[in-house]
Picture 1 (cartoon, chains in turn green, orange, cyan, blue):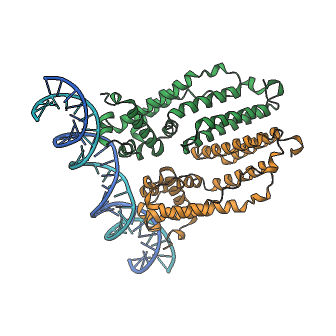
Picture 2 (cartoon, chains in turn orange, cyan, brown, red):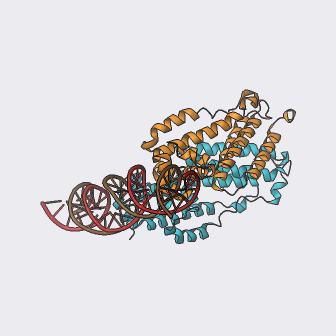
Amino acid sequence: MNKFLSLKEEKQVTIINAALGCFGKYGYAKASVNDIAVLAGISKASVFQYFGSKKQLYAYLLTYAGNIIMSSFRQADFDEKTDLFDRILLSSLTEAKTLEKNPYISQFILSAWTETSDEVRDILTEFKNETGKFRNHLILRKDDVSKFKNPNDAETVLQILMLMAEGYAAHCRNDEKTMYRSLTDDFQKMIAAMRRNFYKEEYLL
Amino acid sequence: MNKFLSLKEEKQVTIINAALGCFGKYGYAKASVNDIAVLAGISKASVFQYFGSKKQLYAYLLTYAGNIIMSSFRQADFDEKTDLFDRILLSSLTEAKTLEKNPYISQFILSAWTETSDEVRDILTEFKNETGKFRNHLILRKDDVSKFKNPNDAETVLQILMLMAEGYAAHCRNDEKTMYRSLTDDFQKMIAAMRRNFYKEEYLL
DNA sequence: AAGCCTCTTGACCGAATCGGTTATTTGTGC
DNA sequence: GCACAAATAACCGATTCGGTCAAGAGGCTT
């Protein structure tokens, strides 16, 4: 049954990343098992040996990716942070740290949310229900608004930060050679600059 | 020869958008002519009737998309604008206006820059040489820096704006139902808020 | 060396799909 | 009803699809 789990971990990671990359890039229908096998440097037959079928492989990746994302978010306790910028920063750092270790997950999950293939519809709805709850970190709270010099800017700044996060993710995805570390530093600097300029002076620590 | 150009324009647009969308989403190799035909609501045979071959269709789209992008950038004279935020805003508005009319172009061009299929390598290198020059609008000039309350923020703000633009583009791409109009308004509001908070008071309005 | 055992894969299967062609149908003006 | 052009259903050989299977390849014991 679990032929795959008895492989040495490095090989597992290679295969998983190849599969995540192919499914993430092409979607379920257009990603062929042969693509994945070639990218992973193994034979197509081995893929079926390890996972049984294409659908079972996809299901495995869904739970795999879901577990990684959820555990990384769980370990960072967002409710502790009471400041908007702190929550944004923590969220970004958490995500960056996770993606640094597993760069193909975000693309895969993003594609899973827009996947339309009939063959995996059932396992996808299940997946969406389980992970959909982890999106409530970036809400604007009422005690955030009062810290702004102009409270009307709060909503705007939140939108800016959301767009930045999307762009940041897209940037990381397109450009694999990028040093996550330095980009994260830059991101921190940007958020600091935003806070410094938008907040009332009494809230600048 | 030019069977396609004698079609009524609405049908041309439908077919072009279907093709741009498929190639943009899947890449040259994985996008099949049948996908495009079905998405456009015509028969596969018609596609070959209009364009001759898959490669010729791709080549047509390249020049089509290249012309639209380049002409839209040419009509907006960036050198006229001497302020960083004005240039950013103009660039965004120009791009948004173009994408509103032709929402599949950005995805297609983005994918063309990472296309690796041997079959279209020759026409792609040609395309890249012609369009590569149109990326020099968002540079930071020295007279921008002095307008900031803290000149060190200038570089950071530029990075924020670049990330926002990427996120903005990604947002538009993923979410076809989004009203470009309202998003553009929001984007303007964000840029205005940034300028209002980062600039010295004497440079406001 | 021989036998055994696990892991891997080249070769193969029928079915589907690929890019591309052709013959028939469909629509249209007269 | 007829002629002509536009569109497509049906088809072509070739390739690729998801999936199977029996023949290696490499190690371990004897």
